Length: 196
Image 1 (spheres, rainbow, N blue to C red):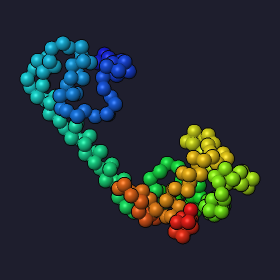
Image 2 (image 1 turned 90 degrees about the vertical axis):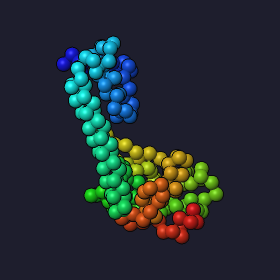
Image 3 (image 1 turned 90 degrees about the horizontal axis):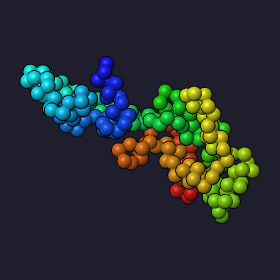
Image 4 (image 1 turned 45 degrees about the vertical axis):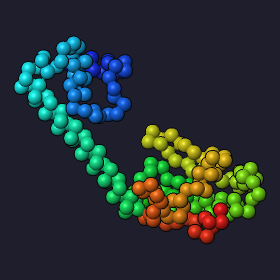
């Protein structure tokens, strides 16, 4: 109990490195244990040879397990993206998420198409922003896990550029550093995308 309190205290004080979430070297947990116990001499001597060997073995297995979990998580995410499933927390304007798939919301999809077509016709982004404000077209609205309403604001330049460069509207997902065909319906066709 005393050791875990010291560990928490030293972690919060910044005397232990917790940024990586895992140790890069088998000796790191041993050094951390030495710091927690407040030992000046090596922990190996304190524990004795058999306990020291056991600690080394356990930390090796722990490190192996952490690496394995990380690899499995990356493989699962890659498999999900290969299937065209959505991996984002929030859906872009025009879509909702159901069973990890983007499903078109017709009213929002019409707004997205209007933004693309009006951008093509407008002479400036400022004119487009003014037109969208007049039409009452706003950013995506969603609820957080705590029930707070987010979004639903008038578009600004950043939001417009982000929307106009989001290839999810072509039915694609980002996987292995490039956009690939996704498992959802496109809102914007390739011809309109290329013109914009």
